[in-house]
Length: 229
Image (tube, rainbow, N blue to C red; front, side, top):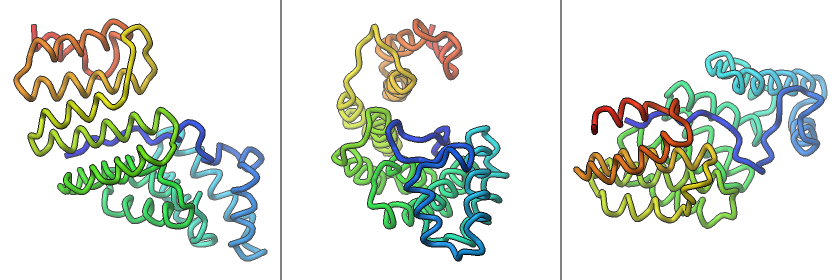
């Protein structure tokens, strides 16, 4: 079963922010173009509130607000994206996948393919996850989104016990041991997890120690090292 990634915007995406005044101009224009004149402000307010709740981690409330925004502007890419991410955060894989497919269809962007792929993992369909990740890797998305696509694809391959392929996929995201972004720690942690599942305990320990060196409180890396030790 897939573990939900923390819903967050891919760096450089056009995800709207917390308040109405901070929503990007293209999002405001989109909602106003789609919603009826009498419903435009309601749609914008609900979307803005949904984003604020999502960023605070209250995915249940974010779903309710985003669903209300969808009633006013169902063809808004931003609305469908935020609703999809909130549903994903609640582990509602099938519904999240449907919303994010709508987001991709409306926007033409592939920057949430890794979330769609993880939904497929959660639904027990890992073989369908890898092509989505591949599409995102070819789509000119920011480094964080690329890393997430690599992580989900590698995890999907590991779900099928295709460990050598999973590790090879992870190597497509190049990292430096002395530089650690948030997604870098995730890459190392997933590498350690896959190596441990493959029975390569010493190699797994090496990856987990890289995470621990930069952030001892990251994930459950301290517990994983204790198990291996």
